[in-house]
Image 1 (spheres, rainbow, N blue to C red):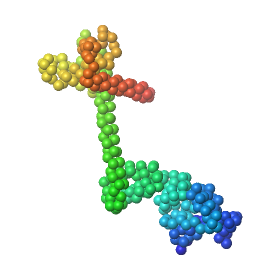
Image 2 (cartoon, rainbow, N blue to C red):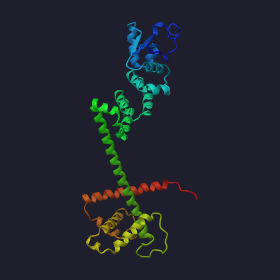
Image 3 (cartoon, rainbow, N blue to C red):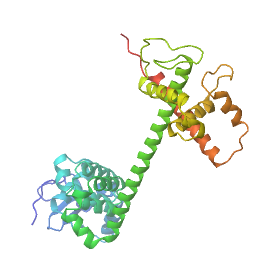
Image 4 (tube, rainbow, N blue to C red):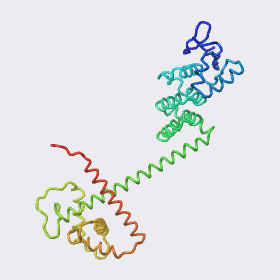
Length: 337
């Protein structure tokens, strides 16, 4: 016989205080504990219990059995129907059982509290068991969190007894988990690829700024064609990019293989000049970047083909990167010295 720990207020006769005898029902647990309760409160808290108490009233029955969970868990469940709260200790002990009861008897407030509490208590050891419960109890937030924990710590989860039991008894759920892990890894790869592409576009955008700067103002060793670069000039703010470009421009102007198209480095510089011309908004007569006018003139004569379509897409991506960088720099607060 289980011993009651939490109950509605009762008098010496076992009747709920202040309530007529005919409106009292007794919830009986699998351990034999009898918990007196107001039929109206049960009905107002749970549509399932409302239906059950209705049937019991018509048959003049007062017993409502709740089996399959510990007696104390049923006691806490009834207490929640009265006071709409559970403490941390109760959640720690009976969170899993309370979630099952909340699902079966349609008590959404308790279900939400149990979901939140169980998410905060997920471990490698219990995550598979709680995943199965979340699946049975239609708790999508808890289910998704369990899946993420398993995906992130799969090597450790694989070693648990719960996972081995799952493999032997629920191959469909195992397949579901493995598919989720595969999808997560695919998304991670896609995200990494996207970030790498974005990084490339930002680098090209910075290279365009540096090319304009070198050919218009001049940097440490290379400057506009119509004047020599200033001696002892301090490095610019993007000198790491500018320095590489200056070396490439100097190489491009002196390379002997460039004429026959045999130099990879010159081809890259050629593409940078072409990219500049594609995004350059300056009049042809004022732009000092080499080959800008020639590429613009040639661009009006080339028909659209797949190669040009790919090039136009690259140009759009670089322009977008320049716009994002401009927004980012304008939003960055200036430090006052």
